Amino acid sequence: MPDGKIDSYDRNLYRKPNPTFTYGITNSFSYKNLDLSIVMAGSVGNDIADDAFQSTENLDGVFNVRKRPLLTAGGRKQDPGDGIYPRTRSGTTADFRNFTSRQVFKATYLAVKNITFGYTLLVKKNNI
Image (tube, rainbow, N blue to C red):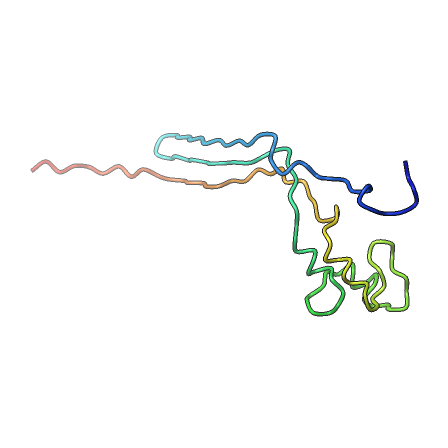
């Protein structure tokens, strides 16, 4: 039940660092002198953290900053911010060094690891 203050009881722990399953497939095709091989792999059901947010959304001016925090907070120091990014004033940038759920993304993916295409040349043998 909400108590009006933000503290450790308001944490939402992400417990999906491991995928539900991983998969891979290798397939080869051939037709006459042509051949094709494809290797694919992926995972489903896990989350991943983008730790770069701690430096690219930190508004104390020592790193390159993403576009959105710069436009909503950094460019207008007198504004209170947009509710996500605070205004830039002394002491507010330390909040962006803390880990938040905005840094967690779905990590489900499919990647093509290798594609090999070939053509077989027919070579005649000389009878000596």
